[in-house]
Length: 172
Image (cartoon, rainbow, N blue to C red):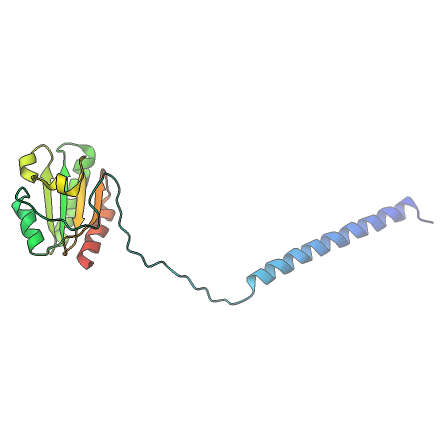
């Protein structure tokens, strides 16, 4: 006859056997999941990314100078030179930060025209804001050698992003 002590030991053995079985099953699944072909293939999409960080601007379209366009921009567009155009408000914190970043980057790229204009002097920048379709400074347009506006940013943009956009328009 089974005494309570024997029943308790039997029940403990059954619990232990079940626990060991579950642990072994989990271990088997984990090991099996790790097995297989050890090579990993990563497929990266090959798309052209156009970044627009604000405003309603002209992106992936050709920038065409008019009679109201500043001479230095018209010349850069006619000579197929990549160009970076900034319009800023003097004294604005974001504006000054972006302007200083451009001034720091510009000497590194002699093959790119860097043009900056003060928003408070509309005669200075002519119809640039209208051509680009932006209204709020600071904004920076990055135009490649084919006169295509590739990037258009409004507001603060850090130096690393500006630098990368310049590198990109030089390569297009």
